Image 1 (cartoon, one colour):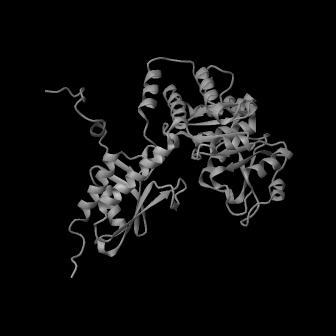
Image 2 (cartoon, one colour):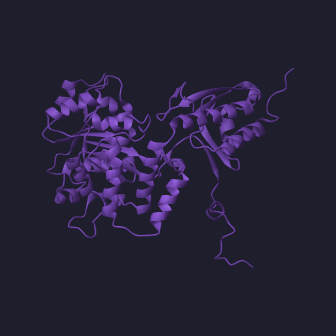
Image 3 (tube, one colour):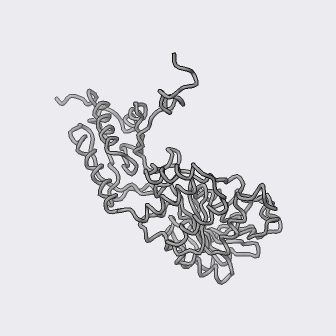
Length: 392
């Protein structure tokens, strides 16, 4: 009789009573991020066998990240949202340990972060977690250089730029923001969480004059709870001063203690980044297109469905190229609505999750394996079998 302490015959899904999911949504935090490659997993396994000084590991990893991006220094973090809080705390406190350990109490500090009004987005909430106050420049029509400058006061610590909102209505470019910031002696902080493609975009932020820039690791195949900051050495020293290390052994109870990392994640981030830079991205996009066309072929004869290869962007728009998704319009002839079809897929075994919109489903193949594409096609055929009305 097997011992209750020997669950070897059970999978982790069985032990934890969780359903297996085929992720046709894309790279999302709520679905666990990306898939780690064998080399990333091997590097994490290797460092798991030994211990290191975290300060040394973080410094060395930061240098490896900073170099290809033209930055002076870097730091691995537990994701882009965490990076935002560290960058903002660094802008407010510098390397002043006394000030850093008082956060989110910002009395007596320069505690205002300026943001263009049309750059508001959900993650600017991370700014306020530090105790900083968000000051919006401009109006709904946009922000001029004069309006940006007029939002700056003696209490301003930095100007913040969400990179993915470049070109938003009436907003200033990063280069224009940097010009205003330099005239007022202020740093510019950039959230470039998923701006890792095309590759030339990544070093562009430092080249344009940003003082600190952050990225999320899951978008380049790293751990879900991973990311990094790069930037000017003086600003990075302030970031490190606010980070989690030496909370127990140092002189100050640093603000970033809740952002602790393990050595395995640090190595995973660096390895994934190096792999991303060396990857054959032409082959990657060719694979996406092949998967999309494969799925389209599998369902092309199903009544009521019309499929179109498209690009589902990181900011959730649909554009023609490059192809990474199949958009499936669900018409009356399918005998089921798009919402009903999405629900039926989501309760299967394995559960298939895709983007469900009014009248259509979007199957993004970024993190799919070929066998999963076949499973999606087979599930669609099974669900729709017998549902389509007979033709008179």
